[in-house]
Length: 461
View 1 (cartoon, rainbow, N blue to C red):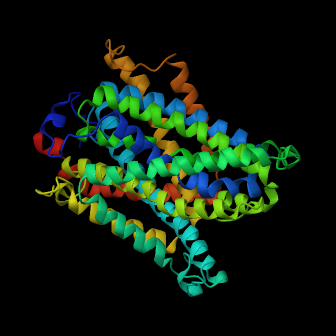
View 2: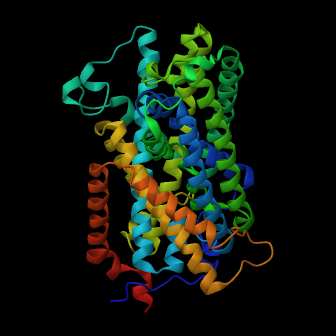
């Protein structure tokens, strides 16, 4: 049993791909922004400031952004030098071999599934707030995920929107991303409006005390708001549908993450300056802040805008996950039926429907805070492995060629990335670690019972 057989380091599969090549740098930047900028700004900023870090949440965002930038540099070099489908899964399969590649793929499946579900859950909160504003109330049992103490059992709205987005993604990359691009532009306009209006109402006194939860609050906050930056890695899963992946994928990754970092810092500064942090434990903090200073019309615009534009995260994450499962299935590590491509739309229909059903189920029954925490730990582990992969890539294949993206200061930056990610992982609770270990164990069981035997590399041996 060869657990570490490797994919060849070439771009042959890209040229043979059945998926339609029609994406460029601009599409990829907007795909990344669609995935990144969403729940982090519209939901998590408020609860994290109120319960974890206070106004010092701005430092938490800087730490989380620094961690993601280090990882994004590693992703960009891989995307330039190993432009194959599947993103991090494909990169690690090529460098470390099949078992480690499968584990990265398995962790990414968890990341995208839970991120999808958490965004749908946050989206549902904004929709309920809007409906209540016009006098429409859902039965308590159907308003949110399972919480017996609150009398909620299933989040119907989260389930419905997940299934609708799933249908949209089956219609083809260009159609899905065209809607995504429009929504991203609307989202940016609303965020700019919030900052431009809010900056005139900022009260520096609201930033005092700056660190009410101490240094522990800042580091714990960084581990939580790390979730807000997830999504830039979805760009790398699109390689098989990009016209020039070696050039455009690195640009998409770095560009989307850089823009998102600036936005998060700006929104967090204004938000905590407008409203005392103790009052921000609400599901719609950005709209709440506008209501707090008396701009009810702007608050209504932001609420409607959030309802519309949070869809971009669902579109981007669903798109990224289906392409990941498509590649893993094509490699034989998951049932081959998941790599079936629809002749008309050139999309992996079976993989998309499976993703939609699983995401809808999780969104309907699992609480948002649990979804976000588990998403963070699996993603941090992937980033650790990606950084280690750069060290091995340089050792075995040397320096990047002229024109290929190059991580600066190797090995210092990759090692620093590993240290920062591990540090953030250890800020998470024991219960999150238990769920992480259960997921990894399940993944190992699937590989040894199914994947190893059905692997295409095993068949070709």
